[in-house]
Amino acid sequence: MTWWRGLPVFGGPLDEPIVFVGDVREFADASGARISGRGVWPALAETRGDEPRFISYGSWMLRHRSDLLHVRLAGLQYRDAAARTTADGAPGERLQLLPEPSNPANADALAVFTADRRHQLGYVYDDDLRDVRAALDRGWVALNAWEWRHENGERYGVHLLLAAPQDVARLEEIVRRPPAA
Image (cartoon, rainbow, N blue to C red; front, top):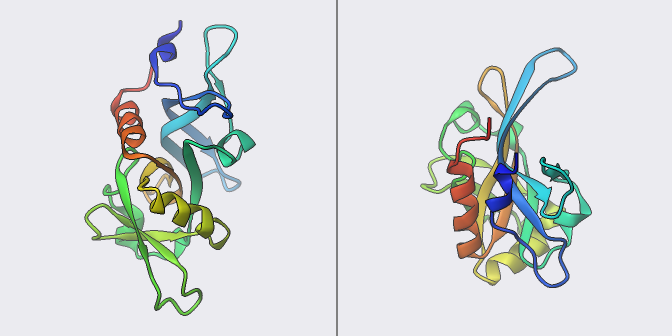
């Protein structure tokens, strides 16, 4: 079955060609609690066989690209319950990254909000600020590409992708597709 072969391929001339596949995953944490995730998961565009070769969100193939930037969300555990449980800012939705110069921990902080700015989901990690600011300066936008949730419905982790608006639109479409059976 090659259901995933029709997906848009991402990659500049020096990038490993990858696709993003709409996916749902589950696992149990150390305490046995169920963690579920959904969104788009990266895979190699060129594979052998009928199934995509998924790659980790921590892979170097995502870290050093010319066409998109992957970062994880920081500080989610410190947000209020409404921000951790809201359906707003779900996978496939654009997010707002706003400077927070009055932040006492880091005057260069970038806060991450839902598109309507009703809920702050967290921050961009300090180590990623330079790359994220450069992406924003190029006119790139942020998308919640993948999120993990505890069995109680609280967000556990979020992966953001930043890319040109037309590429983010392609990712939004993939997230809206139902996962393959």
